[in-house]
Image 1 (cartoon, one colour):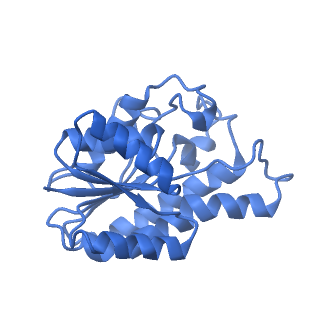
Image 2 (tube, one colour):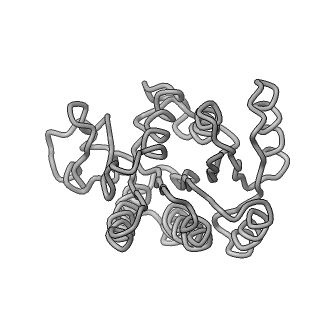
Length: 245
């Protein structure tokens, strides 16, 4: 049975990603900052008959929490097949280039960039034990610098600065990580779940959570001939699914 760890998985897209991976036969470790909320989420999935689920307490902003989660997971399995770096924040809104305080940028980067790096580095040894390891970094279409420079882009005017910068940095990390692992069985990709109706955006997005999670799951379950080092966004590129960086 393949195993997966999803951060920020007690609700919304992360939770639905867990559900869909469970439905495909994975054993899922439900990563969440709040242990009680994680247990409640796991209980909900178990009530649906999806029993191969276990909550793991992990705060991606806290290196000690990440290390503790790695130790806990290592006591349960010596192989991790999928890591979905899903946890993310947008920071205080609105955030602009000139008026947003630096501490807001730091907070957003701590979760969206440094948290991803720390989690990936902590669990890379377990991923290396998998014959087909997959890393999915959940990004945003707003992380495309190319499109942010195009006045014709439909989201051109949407520029929450700290969030945009953090997702662009996450995309850059995805590129270099995929390159570093290019001669291995790893598949490392960035996935934009799309503008989805969630708590994250006060349910303003037109997309559905199941569709958003399906995009993440698709990259998490690529076969041995699957792509790596790509930025997938059906929203940015509906014809090809591959977004410009």
